[in-house]
Image 1: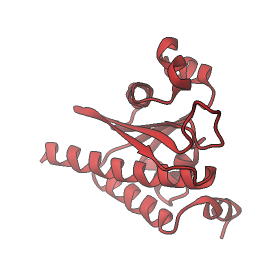
Image 2 (image 1 turned 180 degrees about the vertical axis):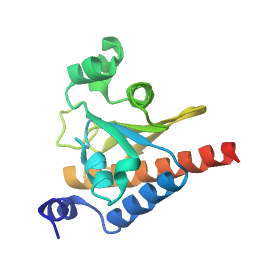
Image 3 (image 1 turned 90 degrees about the vertical axis):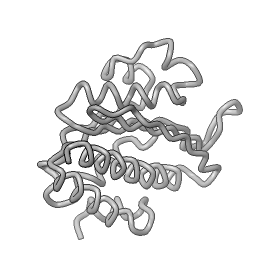
Image 4 (image 1 turned 120 degrees about the vertical axis):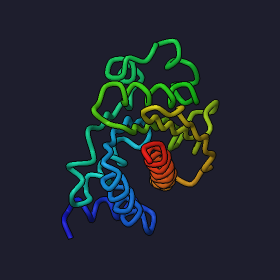
Amino acid sequence: MSDMAEVLDAVLEPGAREQAQRVIERVRDAELRLATAESCTAGLLAAVLTDVEGCGHVFDRGFVTYELTAKCDMLDLPEEIVQHNAAVNEAVARLMAERTLARSEAHIAIGITGFAGPCEEDQEEGLVFIGCAAQDRETQVREEHFGEIGRAAVRAKALAAAFEMIAEATAALQQRRA
């Protein structure tokens, strides 16, 4: 096992590698490409997806926009939207996904923003928004309340939700092509 695999296994939920493998295979079989924009997961989704052998024809690019200004600079998000609730809201997740799709050669893009924890008093630990934009499809956003389960667990659960959203978008795009 590679050093990278050992590091990833330490923070992933059981079955996450298999989920990533299935997602990459589905997207590859559909002849589609992926891109990501991540905040609270800090590139973990991109790392897990690109750890799958053969992902080079599937994964286009990833943005890690952890800091508020990075979201504005890299993804051209409006500052007034990002400043609202420290950039953890449905609008930011939606825009992260949509702007990633527009700035890539991907067919499907994921945007993740949330509070992995620990949090300040006015923030909800475990609150995560995940946006999934796909060509010719309305952007989907999930709001998750994972609770105070720790940073690693919040990130792992966000990945599992993102895998589900990618699978749903892939199926929808395949159906439209048929």
